[in-house]
Image (tube, rainbow, N blue to C red):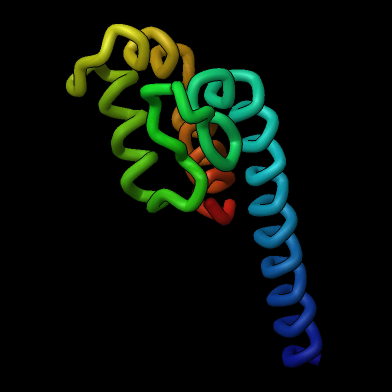
Length: 103
C-alpha cells in the first residue's frame, strides 16, 4: 500500500511539473510575441535590424541579461524600458521559450 501511495504521489509530482513547465513555454511564446519579437524576431531578425536574434540563446544568460536590464544594472534605454515591465516569471518564461528554439 505504501509503495502504491508513493508511486502515485511521484507520478502526480512529475505530471504537475511537466504541465507547469509546458505552460511556461507557452506563456513565454505569448510574451515574446508581444514584447520581444518586434525587434529581435522569433527565430532571427531582418537583415537590416541591429538587434541580435534570441533563438537558441543560453537560457541562464538571457534570464540574467533581462533581469539586469529590468533592474538597470545593464544600461540600454530601449531594453531598460521594455524589461522594466517584466516580472521574474515573465523573464523565466521568455528565456525558456527562446532557448528552446532552433536558430
